[in-house]
Length: 319
Image (cartoon, rainbow, N blue to C red; front, side):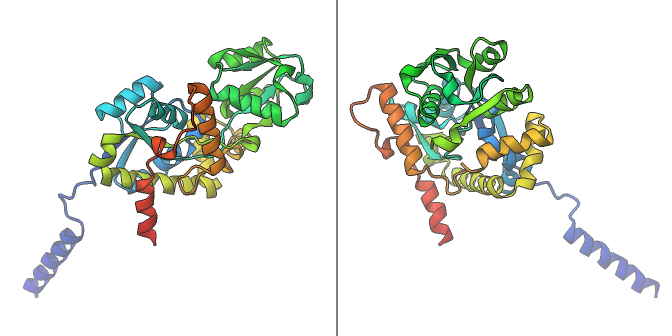
């Protein structure tokens, strides 16, 4: 009887160790270094993927960094960085001959909003006034002019004061009566009673929040990059369709309250690129902008900028 009990105990221990080995190590995650130009809502899908464990599910320790363009592009070529998310910067760098390509895009709508002082209630009231922009030919300025054009103003109806990242401060101080702000700046302004007159997402298609990579790495890290794109596509899908999961992530990331986070999410929700590809409209807008800014004789060709071969492979695997 005693021998039987000992045998039963031994068998139980063996089965337990077989199921829960004491020397089992947690799954080792590969660092995945993704650089953003700044922490904005255009990176929503990356924050969602990291916070909800989507990248971890695919074997990655997603490290979200903030780097200015020159540093990011240099880090891509040395292998210290896997991806850069500034799609416009990657596009223009590729057209200048840099060995980078855009592998996918995250959004096809920008998050900028035309915000005005409290006494201005319509775009028409901006005639003859000075409006805060970024720099000449910058994407922000192009979006600003497009919002004004769609609302009936011509370029000679107003002037743009190029004040870079000081647009929010200039609006609040009264230096300018209106400015093109990003989504987070817009929320801060609305809290203070300022008015949103137009949203770029309603008027313009523009690819943002993508993954740009070094050409050499696309081949040497192909399997890794394929999994990274798959994780990002899943993050985009969740960000676009599961509002209840996204709002807490944005609230924590940007210290937003319940009311503000809903406004911020609504800016980006309609723009997510579920297939990771630019729409014809966003591609044309980006290429027209690049051609004008760089003085190109001909419009850019997609192969000069994009490498969607990994997206093609993922799509083929689903069929």
